[in-house]
Image (tube, rainbow, N blue to C red; front, side, top):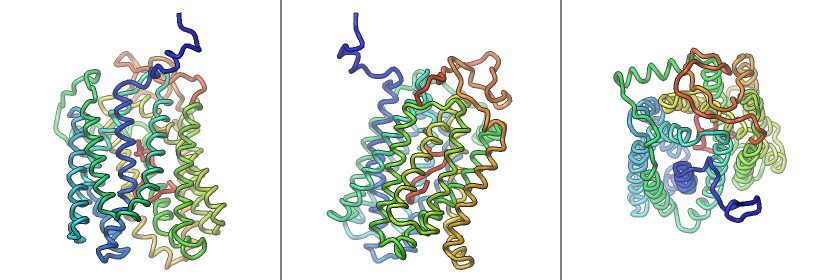
Length: 463
């Protein structure tokens, strides 16, 4: 007979941390450690070749464009093929493109068009990887502790990202950007190898009844048939765009003119990262009953960093604001992932995830392109206040949707329903999946993924 103090029980792996979940978490930590440093390395690689800020933007845009173009196709493919194979293939493409990027930089042969092409290949890989990864993660978790599993996964991811950014910056300074890019390529290879061992025998085989367009139409119907889903995706298309513009365009300018330069701005971004880790830790214990109401209320603090930059607050005050906003967005993230896990049929998870990602990032290039003209037209302070107001307005509008206020965490085994089943109701007989209980314990991308360090998703689309 074992007791609560039995060491064997203390070392036993939690029931929700199965083999697939453990492999997915380990692989995500490896890639986040490499990728966050690579974001810094890529920018400095462009600058080291004689490029300027505009060239850095061109390379970033070259990565974003195929991500937007291919996301929906990636979601349809991931719901047709075994998701782990899609993930491994995408990791292989990222390994090859990032390895070539590193080799050219180390050989001092990188040209702007080289870097743009290779960044575009990396974005293409991400477009196929992200929907498959979110679907795979959600299908690897079941039972009463699903939201705890999502929170731990996101805490590991955010912690790795925070550490990767700090380590990457130090390594770029010490060894140059080429070696950091090479480490990132190796990270993709290791992560792909881990994901190759995922077990998909528990996932029913999918028989495609039509072409990709038919699959996309089916996923679209799944989205538009659920008011809570399409309204929040629409909300985040605005939130991610304006927060991204404030953080990537106005933030560095305010830091240069009023806060003392890049060092204080990096400290503020680090505070946001620490906040996301704290928010994920909070959600390990807290399980709000009204998932989307709690999550949406925690989107309002995303207006605070833009307002803090508009004042502007001191470095200390800005760091406090960034930390609290990072904590708040993780409450939304876990709640969002739990809602998708609870409400969306398993065989449609990747397509819904693709529409989610697409909505979250589609307006980012437009917002960042308009940030400069907006500053010239109304001034930087007014533009920042405008960003803050937009976040508040669209978030308040989402609270007018009844399903957002009323969708509740379900207890026990419930049916994965179609869009015609009202949120919170019991569906007719069909495939069932156990979901979270209402016991007090307490992320998505999506994600997903705010206040955004460049390259970091903040919307519901980040796992």
